[in-house]
Image (cartoon, rainbow, N blue to C red; front, side, top):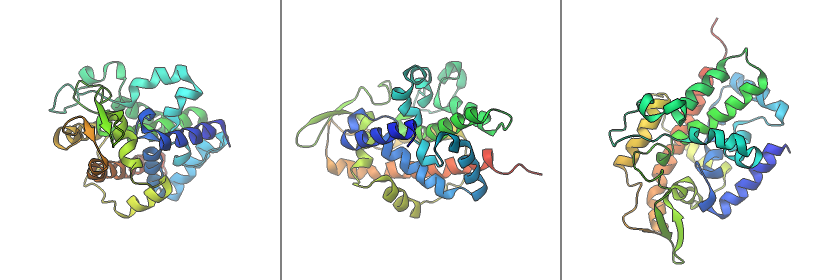
Length: 269
């Protein structure tokens, strides 16, 4: 087991124990998206993924799904430098992305997907650089589909919204609820979750791009019941939200697979 895989395994256990410390869909969400996307890849693209990752003792999208979050333990300095790349803050409920306003210095999830996609597609770059780009792309596409990673509300993506959950009244912030608690309440581990959701996928009419995905997430925050009424939630509330969260996982998986097909597929002759 590589060092990256060891850290991923530790964080996966932590994510199942406590959703309050998870970020960016948490290990369950990221691995479920990666597992579905991996299954949708053509064999040539699977081979490209494997060739990029095997020198690091990894071979699939699932192996790298949480890497961008694992950096907090593997490489704290790099984690700090890339922290703003996991999300984008919109200026209003109109949910229209303007780079100069919403993504200064290119530090947001939209620009990061665009940047690392270009690196990944450039076969003249070193293998290790492209492998890291694959890790970032896989993770950030998933992040862009978590509604609170592309919100317009001034509450730090729900991080400052404190909720009480269950009979014990444990305090959790809304962001961690959407990252992990809603999905963990399914009682499934990622292989079963991916298999279950894969069967119900309905590909979108248009795959879109990073801008469209973030704007879509922003509209989900605006138009759906992402925020609960009051400051208490229970299992019934989690169950009502889970179909929406699962739909976001499915869309992320389909779009990630489509993007990787375009970036890593055989070059046109």
